[in-house]
Length: 97
Figure 1 (cartoon, one colour):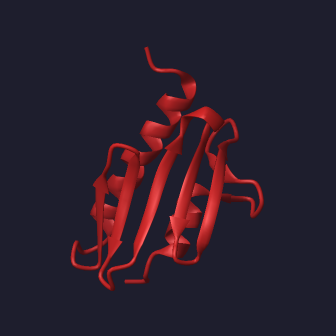
Figure 2 (tube, helix red, strand yellow):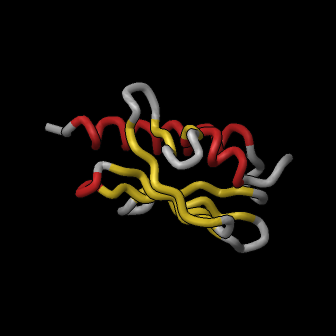
Figure 3 (tube, rainbow, N blue to C red):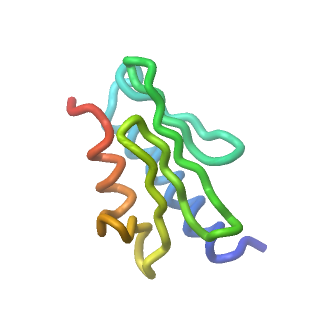
């Protein structure tokens, strides 16, 4: 049985991959699941890596713009240092269409 962290984290990765697939041309941004999370490959060869940190119950995002640690806030994943949701954070890191 999956714990609450795993449930929320896996759903967030699934939703994020679907959002990228629906809103970006694969030549601009490609989303692939990995053993540790989700990797977004950009057209300019940069990557954004979203990984699950089970021991800390966090999602970590590594991007050219910096690193971010997100925690479950009861209804969404949020970066407490910037008060941004995972969706807002990733949206801001990706190139504009």
